[in-house]
Length: 271
Image (cartoon, rainbow, N blue to C red; front, side, top):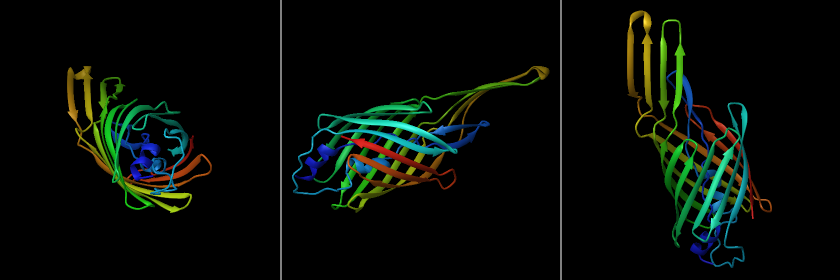
């Protein structure tokens, strides 16, 4: 079996891993969403690696249902995710967690003997995104990977303050973002996969703030719409994955240089 045949049977790309970054502005905190492929790379290229010339009697379509547990602000966040192939080059996927974050998307894959590529379109509670992922096997145990997405935000947070002599009403809208990822996946042992990714998130427009201030005692009224400075931040992810029967438990550590770090435990069932 050549690499393209292998990839066509094993394609399973990313769910949007909810990476929550604390951003303090306008006296309250909101969540920024970013995506990463690193915790799922073993599901595209299983820990067994790419074995050229070996026959594969497995089913051509791929299905996966997973349950992830992430520690966030000292509390556990449970996420149910699923991916199903439609034919050999299309798939649908989605996720839902106990914080009522949801995402659903569709992916179209392209592959040859050199590289696997998937183009995705997604909608979630916070907006929409479109992206492309590329995986390049450089050996039977190492895969280079890259991912980029443009994320349109549709969220808006209202805030109010009604003091005795000051009234403030307004709304806050997060910026659209572009996220980039570069990394690799390494089959360290027969049933142990290690992946690393460097991720960068760039705000394209800056967060939008609209506010109205009314001070009756001074007959003062003011209404403004402003943009905050564009944000940039980086984070790193390391994932360890093993495979037992049709179960793929994994552990992910996400490191933010200037923010809270996250630990995530996951379990995917494949059939």
